Length: 184
Image (cartoon, rainbow, N blue to C red; front, side, top):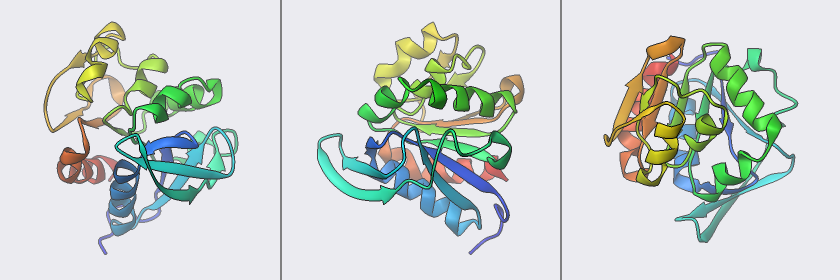
């Protein structure tokens, strides 16, 4: 185990249903391997139902905290995993959107993959940022003031907060490497 993230709490924010399992589990394992403490946060308590490719149910995971229960000060960094329905549901939660905006406002690093950047669109924090995502988000990102690019991973440090983004599960190796580096 490495120690780059020792003592750091990394919040994974996702809806109670719809998260793409590999986009939750792989970054979680990378944070743990780097010595960080991952915390699973949602807008509701209980369990999170993950999926494979949006349609096949995967594993369930216990939700550690709700967004109302975790102060932004406790969050060293934020991970926004994808899955089409995950951020689409979560962006309807004012508390979740406010949490994302507060994390960004505090200058903390954010890592988002696939459809995860939809939460950044909803939080209205993408003005002047360059990022990648699942291709169907490109217009939403542009309309939110961001610049969309098609790359396996992109790190943007403009405007006072680091943002690591990737397009899809195939990009996870590059994504988790850039994520851990940005979170140190």
